[in-house]
Length: 105
Figure 1 (tube, helix red, strand yellow):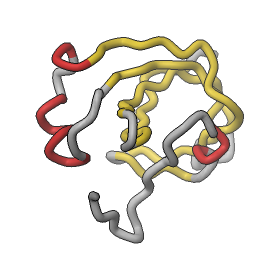
Figure 2 (tube, rainbow, N blue to C red; figure 1 turned 90 degrees about the horizontal axis):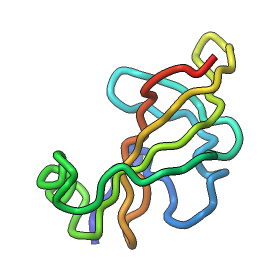
Figure 3 (cartoon, one colour; figure 1 turned 180 degrees about the vertical axis):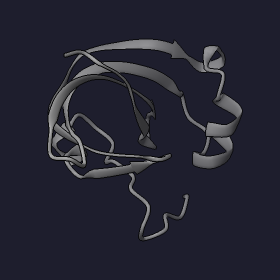
């Protein structure tokens, strides 16, 4: 079992997207997911993921998938915008590293 630092955000595994409603501090971006992620699509699975060795080293073995979807995000300024987001997830590990890729409005 991997240990998690108390200040590290790790979304819960499973379909409960409301757990993503907290501020995410990933790389240099801060934002809050507002509502549910829709239009979810799988981008890559297993060896097709370029970051697979790093994901396995950092979070552990699992059937890793890279996904994308559309969601409303709240920016530090308070503005709410629709955006496409990408993230990785694996069964038994959960969702990791959500990133905003582009604004849709």
